[in-house]
Image (cartoon, rainbow, N blue to C red):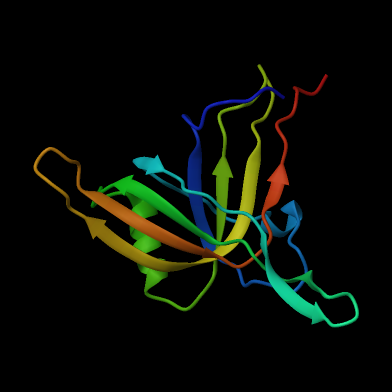
Length: 161
């Protein structure tokens, strides 16, 4: 698969879906009803990073490093504020709870007649803030997603023959 632009990517919020100790699989997201979050300008980043666990070994005279807990980070979404958008309203409502929600990102990379690649994960909506800036700017809604699961990657696929 060649590289592709972020343009055309879409993010959706689903219903409540609690994090679990085992990694999620795509089947764990079946049956979720999705609502697109519209007017997205930036999706930010996400993905696992292990915490460093240093150990200072006297016998080796060297600091040894091991991997500890993993974190998929905080995804910072920036949207043009739309008071009527169902996806933005769902994110605002989700921020008011302590629940975790299913999220899906769909990329615009489908081969002709095929299906696009997707990413699935579970997150808490940690913050929803309004960014007002100066006169010649669009009012923005910033949504911080605290990702609490692995990122399930689904590759783009050629059409079935």
